[in-house]
Length: 124
Image (tube, rainbow, N blue to C red; front, side, top):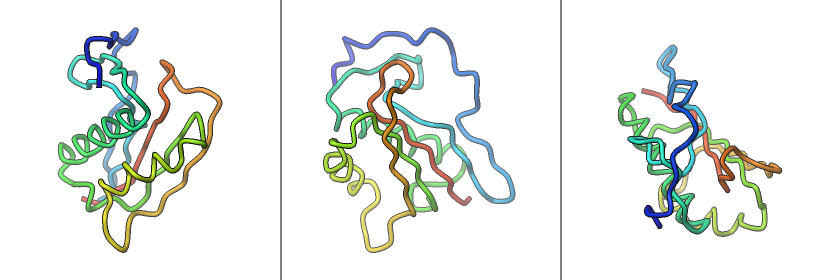
């Protein structure tokens, strides 16, 4: 990923990275952002998916959970033609016979021209 080509987002998030209720963790949509300084990280599609899933992992760990506890994932892609590439990266984060339930949706555009946004529901 080309961190030198990153740019700051216009504002800090107006949301929580996650909320917990009844033993479940609900995350906000994650994207290719350096979540320490809110900088958009540029890179190819697979780089963006990888950083997005790393951010999701980090949020879940801070909430007392992990990717192993993810029950449901919703992924938003701006180009469903990238679906095979998405699956290649995704499989590295959710290996095994029983990955989380998942929905992938093609959208016209995402904030800051992200190519992918991912949210999840996990248990503690």
